[in-house]
Image (cartoon, rainbow, N blue to C red; front, side, top):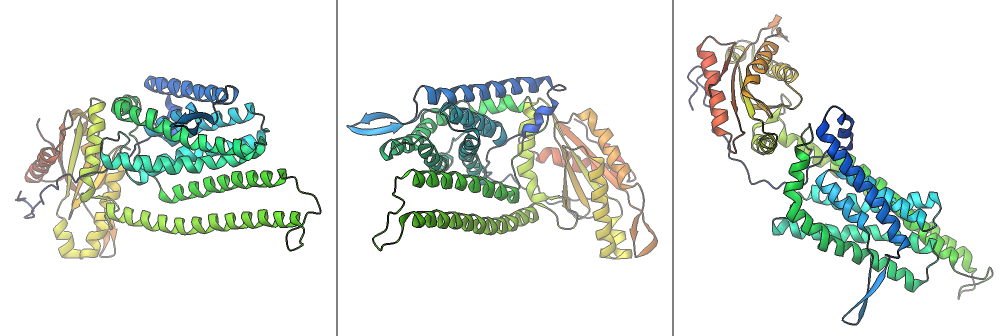
Length: 484
């Protein structure tokens, strides 16, 4: 479309890219608003019931002997552990968020360890292993952008690979379990194999079918009960920190298990090696070397992972943001619109768009230079941002044009917000070294809304664009809300 008033051409809307989406989640802190949001009470009640079920079944795992139960498959002995808390934690993590899944399995592991006779300090450390297993599976799906509904072959393959790695990693806690209970090598091997095979079978036979068959409906039910939209991105730097802590604790679990196992070996105090050296100091030396190597490995992995995470996070931020104003750039609009439109439809609400064009911007560049123009753009973006709601998204669309995506918005709300934005832009002059009195700025704003939110936003953006053209034609520094 040719913009008659400014002589500039608005670039065509970019079609939505093929998007590979991962899990979405909410923070556990969302429950703080359950008194004001009755819909959250159902979520809180369901989560507490799932946590209680995890604790009860965790204790039953010990009291009923569900650890390392042997079966014969084609005359081969196969050990399987039945542990329902793991199923519950994975489903909660993928449908609600990591904290929602981590706490139930921690309390379940703690209760089962105490029921088995482990002292509380050892039980508290042991219980972290299940949390690590759940978070490792969840985090892998987020990083790999695996859709938890598992409809595509790509998602299914990555999910099974991540489940295998998580199950093997979590099973390392069997070393501490076996040594604490004084199990002989054969019984200990049976427990370890049972944990790995049991977790994988529960993933295949329970978690995977539930995710595929019930995932969309369950996540939609949760989505309609939260006030805020779900998250889909996390801080990779913080994620690396969490990984370092998790593996440090897991390393401690393994170290304690090995230390107890070596300590349980009945060796005479004067026993010697083939070379004639005392054996007990050698065993202690082995334990010390293991501890030092584990510490060095965790520290080195942490440093390099943190550096890579910060580099990746910086590149990701730069790819999504306009360097001058800090606004989201135009390339990210299609992705974010698709997510917000889907949520608006679930909430039975519409979506709105504001098209903002700074008035007489070209004359500022011509008279005072591009440095002054850059300061005006940066100041205008800050003022627009300050006038928006927390859920609104601001994009730099090109040149002196900005676009605001307003999810969960009805048409009657548009005019008020658009007028607030217009007033904020023209609230005062922008200080510049080019002029002592500062540079006065103003904006024309076009607004358009659609209810329900359309799949394709091109018509919505075009109507807001025509509305801003009408505002300029009518004298600038005003708001026009598109009909319809």
